[in-house]
Image (cartoon, each protein chain N blue to C red):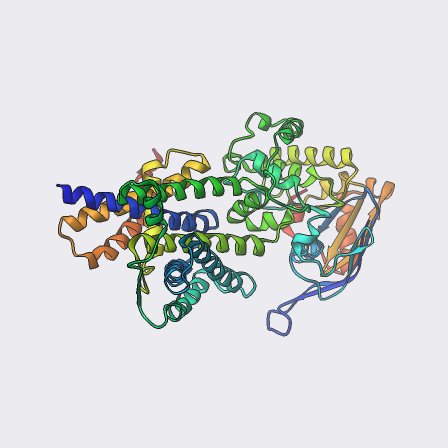
Length: 265
Length: 304
């Protein structure tokens, strides 16, 4: 499914702000893998997702999806394979447009866009059904502007939009971090439902270690632009938060002193 | 009194013809959030091209108008390329094209700053000959006809898949890219279409006033913004996209009516640009002042 081979990225190369963001990442995802990604600030989690999505070009290495080498595709061409939800609820939707217009845009992800009408009559009932499953009452507000929705509603909508066309890979970049705990829980539940239903291959960054252990079938930990820990199956299910902290110390030779990660327990 | 009526009728005709340009400005300013200064140059370009095609190349005025539109599109595409491929800020890219067009427009007119179309046929004269109505009414019908056709076309276009992607680009570029749209392409296309409308408007104004002038586009962007602002104030309650486009044209008509009235009241014509700038500046300042005032007024001591 997804194959990342020895991908490297350095920002601001040859300047005083030079930062090695990715130090040779290798990752292979099987179809249907739901991988949670943890690590401290600056570990390279977001950078990894952004490299897959094509937000910036990589320096070296190779990224393949279903055997297609997408390493040099621009961001908009990779969109055909990738569904994304961002940390910022504002980033995934167009605030000035209607809910159904947003969905129609997302429904055409990766397809040729022509002079056909932007939203067809028969799509609307499909969108309504999909919105109903979110259980947020949005199915009755399809012509409302997205700007009127709350952060949680917008995040749920973005998630739905990212999966209207089944993506080869779903990238979730801390998509619940900006939400209050109750809403975050709800959005996580919706995430698991959708991923489960469509058997999506998913990478999800989180700062909540309990979530990272409970959700998905595989967990990777990153540190200084490397994957330092990769665990799946039964072994992952039996993990404790303390194990992760210890693992981090072992692998990195440092104490896990990231407040956000410890507090997030 | 009849003098006032005639100048008001003139103003309405001018307003409708300039309204086509305002539709172009609406696309860039309202939908893409870009203040495109190409407009001053591409409006004059449309006028100059149209005049020269009719006068020198003896072309049919309709075809001349079409070429004026294409010339405008080319100008918009240059700004678009500078802005998207070479990442020059939109305002600066527009200024560069606008300044360059000044020299090009002079060259098109053979070095003269003014080309009169005294004895040649225009769209308006042909229409009057064919229908036998008076000049004012003929010009008005042509203008309104053009405005309606353009509004319908734009309404259709911005409802299509490409058009929706273009509207979304102005809303949230990152999202649109994540959904597989090349935002450089949508921006380039929007600037091209916008300036095409501006070029056609320049050609229409040239044919109705029967001359092209190197300075005819100066301040066009400010007129466009003023018209949009006036239209919003008058018809801001209307929410549908079609009525928003219509309000841009209505705004242009009101602008030229105001202009005619203040000129008849004895204002110096040279002060008109100051008035236009003031209208736009005030319209942009008022919401900010209100917001700041409300923030201050919301404070009560002691948390009552």
